[in-house]
Amino acid sequence: MADPVPLALRCANLHRYLGQGEGRVHVLKGVTFEAQRGQVYAIVGPSGCGKSTLLYLLGLLDQPDGGEIAINGQTMSNSDDAARTAARGAHIGFVFQFHFLMLEFSALDNVMMPMRKLGKLSPAAMIERAHALLGSVGLGDKTHRLGTQLSGGEQQRVAVARALANEPTIILADEPTGNLDVKNSAMVFDLLTRLAKDHGQAVVLVTHNPDIANRCDLVRPMRDGVFV
Image 1 (cartoon, rainbow, N blue to C red):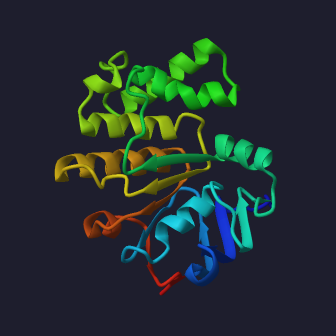
Image 2 (tube, one colour; image 1 turned 90 degrees about the horizontal axis):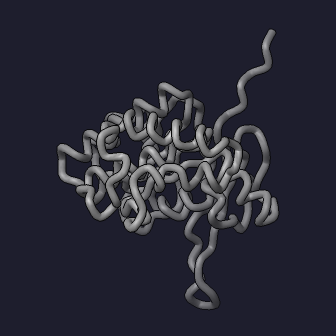
């Protein structure tokens, strides 16, 4: 019997405090969560309930004050900065509300940046993969356009392609359609979820958009630092 595939992402009893002294706030209060490959999860809730804080912890951009995080079966909670950086590059793709493209670079260059940082592919293979990813998000004819020459919806589609560049285990998305109109929101969500499912990746997204949340495989409502 084959060994079970490890969960893409698991966290247990996560706690996070922010601030100092009398202003210290208990933002996450023992959160437990897991994500399987090929599934899309929505985390929803009012502003300030801890959604984005949780996403930053899961993305290894911040460290918890207590609890455990495992990425692809490897415990990362107490890893040093070098190990966390390496795990982010290899296993995690990010899509934020603001695309954070390097606007003075072409769409192709933006998608290639994570690949260059990881350093696993040859220059020719990076170019080939970046072309393929931009084609998959409908921008195959705009690969050499600068970020400043792309619309808001096109910029976010480049950001989706960039998040997929290193074939990560997990895609973390923080309000990925928050700055887009209805048509572009639907397009970006469809692209993100279809491409991730095609490649067996877990998607965890934070959203205030009920239409987007209701199209996910599982919705986890959050309030006051815990899932409810």
